[in-house]
Length: 298
Image 1 (cartoon, rainbow, N blue to C red):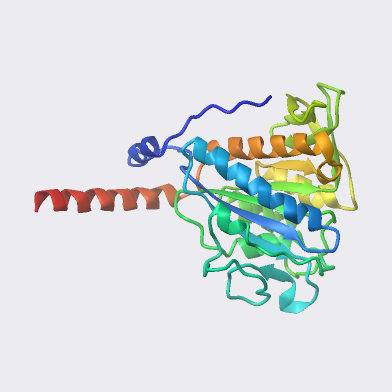
Image 2 (cartoon, rainbow, N blue to C red):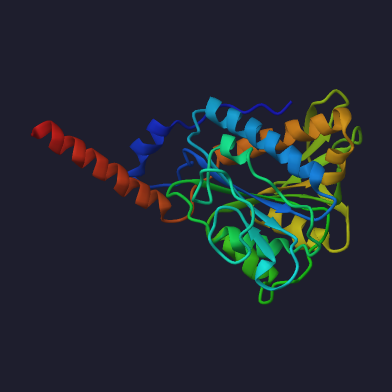
């Protein structure tokens, strides 16, 4: 099984801010980009439990406090194309009780109510919407896109190159849970759950767990799913996952969830914030230090 060692503590990060260099983020801001078409009810329910498990593992590694947001997509026509949660913008739909901002805790996320009434799925539009959220300085930025369709090009002006640049320029890792299959050259036993940008592959072990192999690559995908989403996720430094294995249920689905949560934790644990945000965090820390010094001198 994939095992993650604790590497980063908040105190050590703050101590290193003033001397520069690439530093791992002390907490994460995660946005889920969820397809809201009629076939997605199962995944909409599943992601809530996955977010709870993800946050539990991050907190156990002292990566906290973490924030979670969502963009639902699949509403056809004009400004209602993308559905926003807790954001006062065209297309605003469901909200989390008591929240006025896009981000909340893992517990807040459980109160989201998704729709399954949509029929136009533009995941790039969902990425563009999430890019408008206010992320914290120094955070690990992560997107999780979940859809069983390839992209419907419903929002004009979006390109693969531009969408990828919006991710890489902010050090945002994308994970795509999509209708695609994957292969793993190092092992032929068990279905391949997903692959990483580095070529690792995650294979169900038949007992609810998984093993890590090498030589992972995409095999097949619905329509243009590989070009639209799998290639985008891998190019961002993230991973891509076979949605159909989650839908298979049983031990295979258990393996899917275990691998997905573990790999997300590993990504966040080793992720650096977007360029410039550590400098902002350093200024904040310096300000706190000065305030404390003044208070002690008074």
